[in-house]
Image (tube, rainbow, N blue to C red):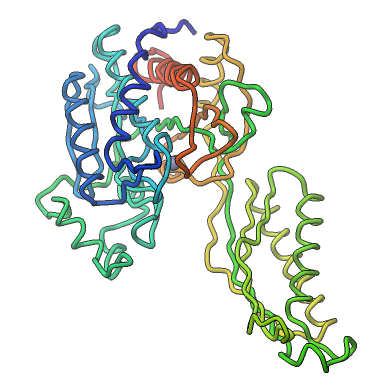
Length: 419
Ligand SMILES: [Zn+2]
């Protein structure tokens, strides 16, 4: 593979990211750009203008996803799509999502300038929503584009202020019957560039992460019921202490998760004790359980065996035990052929890379249901994300963009790649 562009094509990338971070910028350096808010809308319009200046044909769909198109000679061939999301978490960073959109935009602009029109149509997308930060739903953008979501799924959903998704969408100028439908049936490949949001690349000293799979997730709500009683008058042998039971479960969870090895991760992020008083034995404990793995069978068996072990602990302590699974997503494998292409692009640029599993969810997992999809990561300083401290160096950012551009070049201009 011979890289079609030199690194100077991406010199303006860090500056453009900084400019985009101005929409929703906060005093401490964070960015808050929630779906369909004024800052979100301004960011999308800014990107549209940048796409237009780069010579891309732009359009919004009904949900507010923004596309920039570079028409290919074979207009009937499936579209090669890249991009990520423009929304942020509250007080998030300036790279999560935005980086993949801006890098995709610059890659298409540079390819157009240097190589002219492609054989197959190339598009960049700024997806309207991924994080689930304003409304209790995530992947609204890629979900609508891939058909995982329909517009009906947004009905009855409201934000913390009681504003419905439909109302917010209208206010931002979307959701109209007359607007371009969201569902895409013409995508041949999707490639997403993202910051890692973890510490694996930095620790291993690699420049690019090649995502082989995105983990599946299970989330549970666990309730233990014991007996609240006087902390002074109830002998140790006569207690049903729900918190003592929970502590035994948490210790076992960590031991089991470490024994299972990477990429399994298990987390208890919230634990509440009732009544929560210093001189009363906790009669009830509720905790959350977040378990992730990239293999469905392993995830399934770990969850099943762990919950069975929890139940046994509860029984031995005379505690009531209840668990409810409220989120279950399947692991998603990325396309091997596309990942191989990214790997060759890294080799051609002498960038070090490693294959890895993404422990966080991404838009690419929705596209993987409808077309070959791939993801690449650049390092995040200290593994920090969803924070104003999120940072990747200009070099890391441009290196990732160059590898993305090489891959897009092979897909859209190359003779061999056909699906
Ligand atoms: Zn993201």
